[in-house]
Image (cartoon, rainbow over all chains, first blue to last red; front, side, top):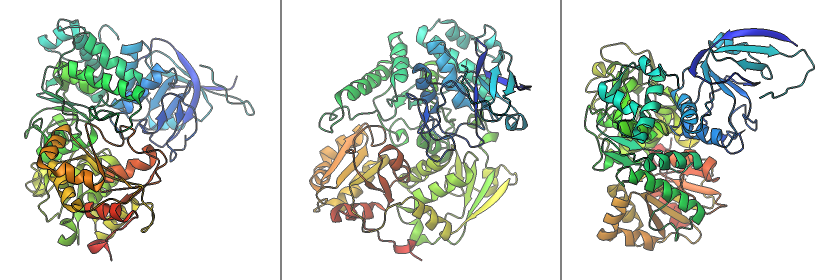
Length: 154
Length: 428
């Protein structure tokens, strides 16, 4: 087991279970509409650093969403298709992302927990870190010792 | 949903009754979504609205369809007059337009679900150019980025950008979170944008406004900008193009044009007497660069598609296109689309303009547009448009490279079968 740190996140949309996943981290905002294929989970915004990555089962760490009013619909489609991330951590409250998750909860009983953290805390999360999100918003960040591969737990 | 969640938002008796299901299951679900989301917007209470506009009727996938049909099946009925945005098919001519039947069936089911809930069959992204337009100061729940920007900036009505499927939730409850652009202070300008050295030969052109909007959105994103120095008398269609372009390149929901838009009779009024947080200057060079960034095909290149009507062409715009197209024909192999509302389509049919456009070789569609319905033939490599919005989205959604030009350039290029652009005052 590697280094373990705790971050206090503010719960924007709650989950009914503790969730775990590997972190996907960027400091570039992402528009889900036109940026995420909800049926495959692939980031298709070719200008975004995550282009080609799969969000499915990951914990997304990003500043906020961007652009279209339809982003909430895209997150809902991803939830229905079973291709959604396990949690979304932003540094700015994004009502459209929160809306997509609330719809997932209301329609399918499958919310994606959405949390807001300080920018400095977000900067302390590295791609590949193993993240556990507790019900109260506590985020535990576990960094594997060097040489251990990226593994998705969720 | 935590049982005590309603306590974070102060609800009226009527609102509590909706949350308890007294107005039916659909309204209960809509109110739950609204009450859960209100705190995310920073609202501690809800606000009544007088009308709504729905963007969620565009077919994006089965979740959106299931949601709408569930609300309709549970007896959902809108509480306020509600207009519908474009849908993902021309409801009358989808077969002739080659829309795949399985796709058309789902798009039509989605439209029907919203109609069943009492929404009006407007099927346009320009509800502000129909009888569904709000008036100054009216509190409304509108979705669709260009319509939100136009309603706030040009009309002075009040709405935030409401995402899918919060829009129908607001319509079923007649409520919005009391936050953001519904309140006074967030409507005031924060960024001053000074236009300097822009000649009237440019501001008189129809292709000036989308370029200005596209530049503005990229500069200010979601801030409320105040544009000073636009010495012009823009039409509703000019302002429509400006608002749509600004809401494409940035998350623009509101802006002020000093001396033109209703909340900006003076610079001081637009800022509410406060100082700008920052000041930007736009000159002809910035506008030229923004215009150039919308085009990724060289002049003279072969042309596959010409698309006019994002946002939907008004009657005036359709008739201007017909005047340019009269007695001419688009070159073989060039697909020309004019996208508009059903109401305008029927007026064109009666006035004879539809026949002129059809003789030219244009396909005039109603209810939909080329970025929400598969209208453009696969394999099209170049698409010319007078819309900054189409030019921005065409590469990603249609897979074609874009060329931006004036309406006259678009028609001349359609006739020539290759890209022809008269730079006029845009040239150095």
